[in-house]
Image (cartoon, rainbow, N blue to C red; front, side, top):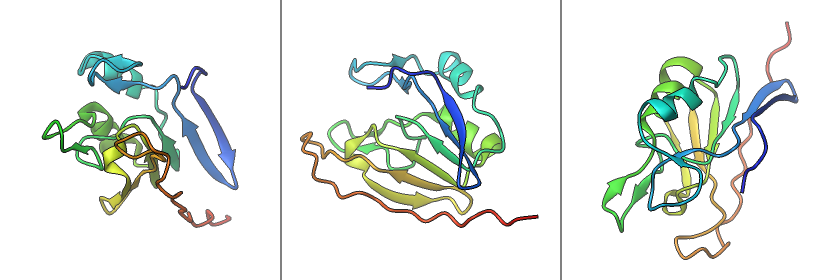
Length: 138
């Protein structure tokens, strides 16, 4: 569980933002849920521009967020708009939807659902390793 405040720090020349406490759109009464709409948008509006790596609990809508049992995508549209229209990080990592484990891209951002657990809560998904090129020095 994530109980710390949001933090932003540098890692090997990249700006990394970890968003905690974890926030997600309402989903089956799990913890840290907020209603879709303005309350989530208010959280995502706190994400600064100019970061390379964004880490959240929930996925953006349409990226590794399909839940077959519910027959729907459960990602956050407010987070999607924040990522694609404003922040545009190189990498967005999340893991809240276990069924969505894997990697996708929209051509600008690479989205990684790095959930270690399967749909049955078994921690058997292998780690995902992603190399992000070092920023060029000026």
